Length: 147
Image (tube, rainbow, N blue to C red):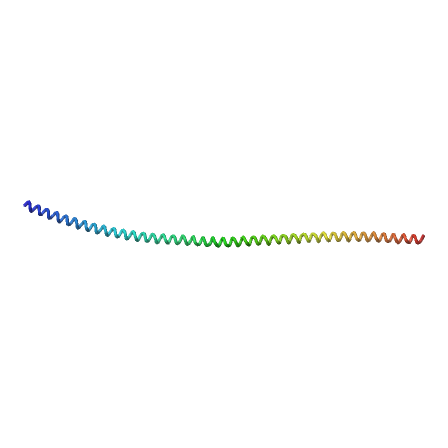
């Protein structure tokens, strides 16, 4: 009876050991599936994050590229404006010189007119003096002839 119990006990232990091994194998298989699922999820998450990162970088780079192009355009327009301003300053300077020259010539004309009026006055005065001298000279000759 004891041997029977021992056999029976041994058979139970072997059955339990096989059940335990089966449960252990099932658990290992389940863990492997869970690990595969986790790895697949991790790969999918990494791919999604990579895609998102690339998309964000493209968006940022696109904005940076737009800003860079606009900055280049602003620089071109600033150089053009600077050149136009310098040309405007040159033209303005020439106009100032022309107007100043014209003003000086007008003053010269005014001075010339005053000079001509003075000479005319002097000539008229000299003419009057010469006429007086001529009258006196003819009066003096008449007196000498009469005497």
